[in-house]
Every structure is written in C-alpha cells, then in structure tokens.
Image (cartoon, helix red, strand yellow):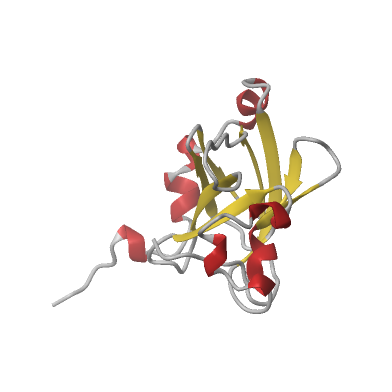
Length: 162
C-alpha cells in the first residue's frame, strides 16, 4: 500500500500558494475604518530565527484578518479594535498555520496593560511569568502595536488548546 500525504501533512510553499488570494489587502484595510489598529511583529523559531511562509488569522467579535509572514518572518495586520463588552480584556484570538504543523496553534494577543486584565479567566490559567508573551506593546503611536511570536523554546508564546 502506498501512502500519499494530505494537504495538512505537506511541507512546502502550500500556504503561500493556496492562501495568497485570501490575504488581507493592506491598502484597503488601512483605509476602511477609523477604528483600525495595526499589529506588527515577527514569528520566530526556537533558535530565534524568523519563520517565513507562516499564516496568521486574527479573530474578534467584530473583525477578522488573515495575513502572511514575509521572507523575514514579519507580519502586519490592520483590523478593527476588538470591542468587548464583558469582563474579558481586549484581545484577538490568533490561529497560526505554518510548515511543520499538522494543525494550527491557537493563542491570543491582548492589548493594553497586563495589570488591567486580572479578571480575564483565560489569563488566570497562565503562569504569571509567561503572561507577557500574550501582550502587544504600543510602539508609541496610539493605534500601533508590536507583538512577536516565539513558536518554541526560551520565551515561547503561550498557546492554548483548541
């Protein structure tokens, strides 16, 4: 019997070829809403080398965006600010797809002050020393944030079960 890999088992330029037409158009995304924020960052491996050809999906109650990383591992997403009317802190759910993963990994990116999120039930499950991996920092501009993702190793980003 011969086994043929399925798409979820294929390593290679699968994401850049298959998902390219579905990526966010950064020019229209930036111009479409006064409530847009921009998050920029780099996806790193365990050796702190950038990971090219990853795809990130940002989800909130009022927005969605899918963006790739470039050859330098950098991504930029522009998306409506996550308006949450609950005790949950302002955040986006993030799915990361990339070579070598049979399934996406799930994490979150929080905006704002980590001390102001004490009531978030998901953050209560995270060891205090690792919470910082889930927070985007302001880059000095009111609507611009920086958030780097480390897939494994030292300073690994917190990932949740789906």
